[in-house]
Image 1 (cartoon, rainbow over the protein chains, first blue to last red):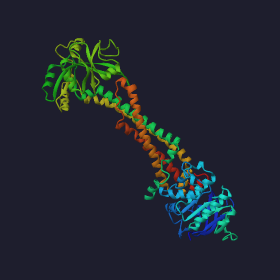
Image 2: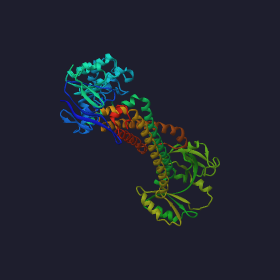
Image 3: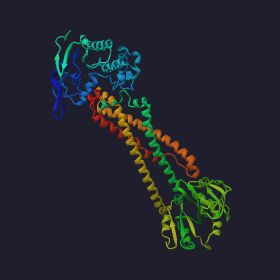
Image 4: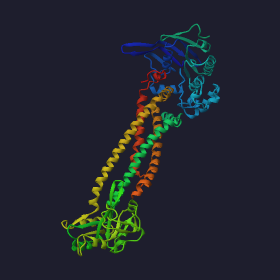
Length: 222
Length: 388
């Protein structure tokens, strides 16, 4: 198991009022799996990704990565995991405006990733856009650059937060296919979305509502 | 530490933002450059003006001391005593006057020294002054050799006349024909003592009212000790030790003003840079949040910021020094040289005054960004919520 959680929850406090964004969430992520989590907006899907990737601490329960508690690592070790083992596709592309596409893919990393970044952009149909700035790219192209950024360092787990939210159906399928191919090569992916049409790319499916995660027994394993 | 240092070299380069956002980069650069320019230029000009004052009022006393009678003339026994002293090489009678020039600090006086005509060459050999052109005055004639800086300041040259008859501001009475131009570190004029004595109000007979006293080689201090032992009720002694304190007092006030100006400019510029950097940082908040989400540590982000700001500071510093050099040269040619003031250029002292600018700007900017990074909530930022 790469990632396991047991009874984790995230609670936000405002004065005496406590609001649970996640509660009693248990799941596991294995190498090679594509896990999809469906649910309406505000159901806690993004919070779950932030929890799994160590960007948010759990208020209760525990998250383990490769058998070791995330909470047992210091913030530097968790950051190191995010730098080497995790990749993240955010809901918005979050590209740096003054960097070219290929520089955005390599953001925070050394020049030795440059060639792989170019190859990834080529695979994603952006071979002629490597030196384009985000403002010169369409929304779908920016999202593909963000996807390349999440994959450039060959992470063990890719977290994707509604990566197909603002792209057309063809592009959605293309993005899912790329993530699926990546997992076939040994990576793992945890993706949240509310596009039910993408279920076919999932190995495991969960549904989420009001911070509670439930296995989607109907679709899982299809 | 290794990882942090390695990450500093990661893409994007710390100065990529400034290079690709030229309007912001140039604005920040100009801010640093202008402050370095102002501080360096003011410091260089002040130094040169003060050096001019030093040369005209103090420097001569590094080569000779002066005794002046408190009566009608210096008693011969005192002169004989000095001529016998081992520490004294030469005792020359002299009288003095002055001419006025318009300097940066307003009307300033420049000394006119009258010595026996046969001693002109001796005096010139003992002072850092030489004849640049023309000839020295003749004995007993209303003639004068003036320093080139005085000639430039007064707009006169060989063959012209100077003196109170020509310029009522001059203390030098009558009219003197300029026969030669002097060059060297001391802005002085030379005239014939014989002519001066003929014009002198008092008849001193065989006695002389004042003397220049030159030391034997390497005996300057010993000579001044000898002078200090002369009867104070008969003569007044003026030495380097007696003129320097008043100059230093005046100079220290100017240095104090310079430090105050320096501090003020540095504080204003650093505050402005801090504010600009806060806005600059806020406009790049998502970039920092993204880097943090990717896994870069706060230490790395701060170090990258330091490199970026320090690069800006150093380039601004260099550009400021270059601009100051050009500005000082232009001011020197257009404003100071016509007034007989040589601007020495940008010296180490001027550079030292400007060094706090890039350092404080870097420190202040880094602290601003460090503070913001420490309170940065990456998830809130990435979700587009209030990130404070």
